[in-house]
Amino acid sequence: MLQVHHVNRSFGDRLVLDDVTFDVRRGRLTGFVGGNGAGKTTTMRIVLGVLAADSGHVTLDGTDLDAAERRFFGYMPEERGLYPKMRVLEQITYLARLHGVDRGAATRRATALLERLGLGERMNDRLDDLSLGNQQRAQIAAALVHEPEVLVLDEPFSGLDPMAVDVVVGVLSEYAAQGAPVIFSSHQLDLVERLCDDLVVIAQGRIRAAGGREDLRAAYGHARWEIDTAGDVGWLRSAPGVRVQHFDGGWAVFEADDDAAAQQVLRRALEQAPVASFGPVRSTLAEIFREVVKDEDTTEAAR
Ligand SMILES: Nc1ncnc2c1ncn2[C@@H]1O[C@H](COP(=O)(O)OP(=O)(O)OP(=O)(O)O)[C@@H](O)[C@H]1O
Image (cartoon, rainbow, N blue to C red; front, side):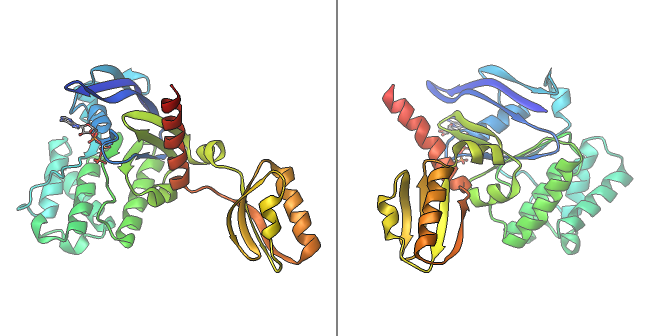
């Protein structure tokens, strides 16, 4: 497991990481989400050792990381780092060689990875002849070709079309399943929700929530239900223990204090008209994100 322990970092007199602590478990995809300037890139740079923390540390399986261990990390930086004029296969093979992979294995791995990422036909093109989405795929190949022990990716999905996203997700999931900790940052909450096993939410340099996706849903998602009936459910507005969020004739989404209040709604609806559907509504990550950040800001304001 990769662990970030109590990391602080300032630029000038501005604290941009404030006691940042979280885990990236092996065998799972961890999404690192936060708004612009929240501190994602700064945290990733510290994990990679490209930037030093003012205090705090990063460990892998309990051991503090040094430069030698970080050589076996795979990183896709925010500022993409490949040579525009170099041919793609040559470049990815070269990067594997820099990590000590022998020539034959480097070529084999680079070829297989590029094919897997859908660049089989473009391997002998120069990078700057590729579309931006294909350049992005090549960047992902660059991060993976030396079979890193830990994979850290800054916005790997930005600019990819949905099919490319699926291909890249397949590659990253397979990689994580082999036992590597994999963390990637993203603004795209819908995507993160679909892909990640674990989530770390950061805002204004502080971790607001971290853990398994379903655990976060259970902890932060409000208990909400959706009902669809042949009648009119306007009476829901004055039902005890219930707050209506959306309403349209026989259809409504509502929060309930507890299961008993929700079941009471169902009983009353059934007395009046046939009920086509009734069930809980799962909170989306975007809703949880807003709530986590809002909760913290409210607490801040109250201090
Ligand atoms: N080298 C630097 N010097 C001064 N301030 C910096 C530097 N690097 C980052 N910052 C500031 O630190 C804060 C966190 O930036 P960071 O790039 O880590 O955020 P982010 O979550 O990756 O944002 P984005 O999603 O917009 O890339 C921002 O306010 C940024 O302006």
